[in-house]
Length: 302
Ligand code: MLT
Image (cartoon, rainbow, N blue to C red; front, side):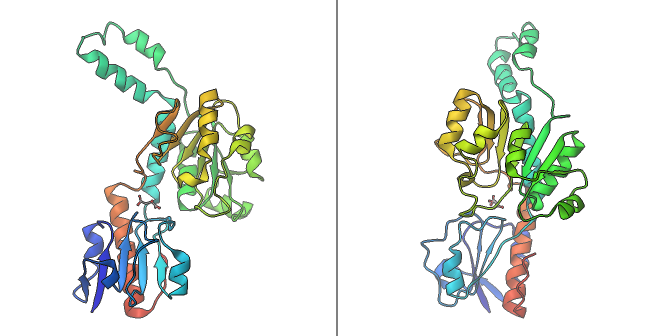
């Protein structure tokens, strides 16, 4: 009989995988296994029987990896399980940045009561005119599950897509997405692209990678999208670039006080993986991983 604890609510279809041999417990410190979404576990007290932690999501920065390694606790994540949901929100982010949908909706709400919409429609068409994604250059930094889906979808929108990933060779990038041009250096991607989207993990080596210098290499009016982690971006440098207009839009799925409300910032409350499908996929994968490890000793991160 295994005791498990969910630190965050997890989809029922995932919990359904944990059959009668599994008992839910109310405290992490009583559990053999923990399921977690976004709760930060660094200060948490673990049971001496804790054997595994499964993160229903891709990033593992909320889990104390070193401590888990020292204590022999296996950590799983669910790579790819929410990638489609994130990809779709990245596309929405690019569209929000290129078409003034937010401004237009606000204008309709303000004017509908006065009945001025039909009268002022021509003014609105001018005020909220945007540009098209077709023919624009998109740079995708990080060609993992999400980056490749974004790259493929963007090519279907007629964008010219450049990929950069120091861990993916030109050949395998081509196999992952036949339409991606492979940027040889990240600087080349910075200087050539109209839209830049980041899909790398939060590591010491990636922290603050979009800094003042990186931004200075980018085109005037560039749009930067961050659906990966906020620490990848030096937010002070980003705010300066938004205020000066060098960066036209920063679309971020991380609502930090530094960027929220700044001109050109489009801030979303971490909704990339918040779809029914992604939540179900992550919960099922995480529960299956725990079960396979606890019952068969298998460590399979998929
Ligand atoms: C992830 O790392 O995949 C996301 O943070 C998932 C989530 O929203 O929980």
